[in-house]
Length: 364
Ligand code: OGA
Ligand code: NI
Image 1 (cartoon, rainbow, N blue to C red):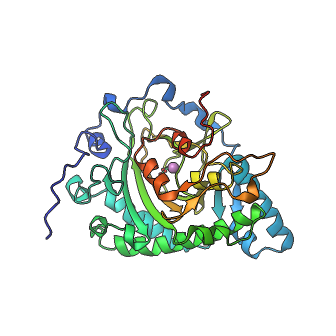
Image 2: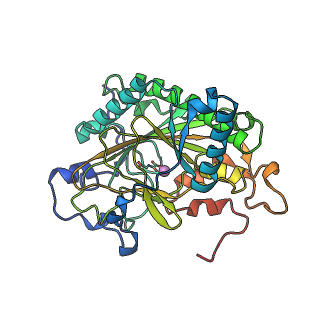
Image 3: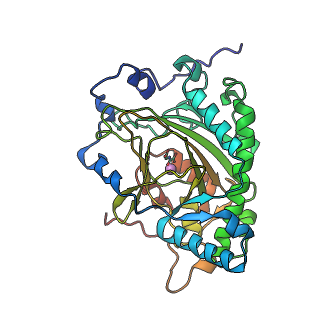
């Protein structure tokens, strides 16, 4: 067996929330307790009427003319006003989703020493551990993460692809292929909804970068004090999120200054616009801030795919979306640089996008 790498592992017993939780503590360690203003108001969870938009992909792809048109309009509204939607009839075999959920869950259920064979080395974002932690006094998320680069193959770190569960690699491979296709299809219709040619993004992105992050949120005795995942927008173009079948409600999006829960719909996938599409569309489509909260008794699993352009490309607002009424709001930059900027800063709402803004908004 290959020796376990000896570089420092940041996640010790004390920061690993699954390990912490095993002792069933009544209090949570200070490092997880949020400042008053950041704590979740869990009573807000009762609003069920305000669900995020739902897009039926089979109507977009196979509907008659009227259905296709009306679904594209709904997609436009979803991207413009919500930045989030759930996609139904996405065409991915449910076994593929179930298998992925199972191996991800099985991975998190392994003993800590087994998971620590795939550590997230300091300064990197792949492997098992806590990403986005840069200082001793930063609050920690009530979450364990396992992240892997998937495509193109050069971003993979094969040492981090676990051999336990035995079929993990094979299942992730199949899963990623399916999700990649879905991202391409969605980007095509997103382009159409913007009045652009269907293949603009595919051509522009070259060989798209795809990464997966599995988030496991154990129950927390004080869900009112902690966050599962700090508020952030995603750096991707598009994000695809699968929620575990028996998971608690946990994902929340910030809409009109209110945190709205995303009610899971069986077999649907949650899609959101990332920073890259916000820049490309000159802000017409927005990457919306979101976070995760925890639950007193239930755990939660999410499997999140980030789909983004090749690191090599230069990007900025597309000329078709810049005019007198919509002056250019973002500069051009290299996508690799943005990705680096994103992963070397803590998650803090939409702060990372200041990188691209022509006039950083300093008023709030
Ligand atoms: C993420 C994310 C939310 C969730 O991983 O970027 O927003 O519900 N996850 O796990
Ligand atoms: Ni996110």
